[in-house]
Length: 346
Image (cartoon, rainbow, N blue to C red; front, top):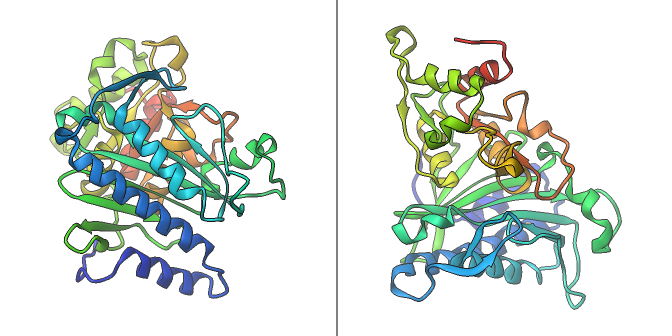
């Protein structure tokens, strides 16, 4: 991963990339990303004062995923919707917190883009000061349809069709990591509170081909199948020749686990399990979690799989579809595929 002088703002970087890739661009995409950055700054401010204000804890509501909605979840979701709906570049939005697609109010113009997002990933960790984040994926509308009732087909595109994806991580510092694909690289920007800007801090992030870390919730071990047991046992077995055992690191916040492994190498896994019959095909959401991070890791030289093939090739059938996820260093994820598909047993 190359580093450079911290002097380029996220806006400057987006504009420079746009000029290189598409000199005829209208600037619509730049406007979209800039407004998302503003939303993230607002969310970051609230996250950073969470222990000082009455914004911790549950709202008492349950979202479409069957999970307790945290106050900051609701706040982040509303901020993103309100910031993005007026810019004139979106035809609709999709959020982890909303059962249906989010329409653009009639008083605002509509555009050609779609944004899908998890407003506050890892929010159950808010009150213990663990890093949390916002995940997003952006698509281009395929049809000329404008009515919300008919836009689902435009939304349900394979992850490979994303035109941009990334995440914001709210931790010891606030960072934005994003890519527009097609060889443009993955770039990280750190929010400098003193100037109120995201400045380029991690240019052209490359994840190691092979890592030394595995990240998985081993509390679910009794609910896994034997293929998953063998995979995890492989990572834990001592073998100097293959530089095992791996180190185990699991935060329980997808953004935090993914970000660490992206920079240091390794594999994050959330296998299918039998703990909850409704989540037997996996827990993580294809459209708002797996696809955006898969797009990022691929551009950084890594790989993401459901255990049988690329996450980015999955043809989605539902807005809130769930999948198993194996993501990170390419060699580690390819190894996981061999175990999960049954091609390897030890």
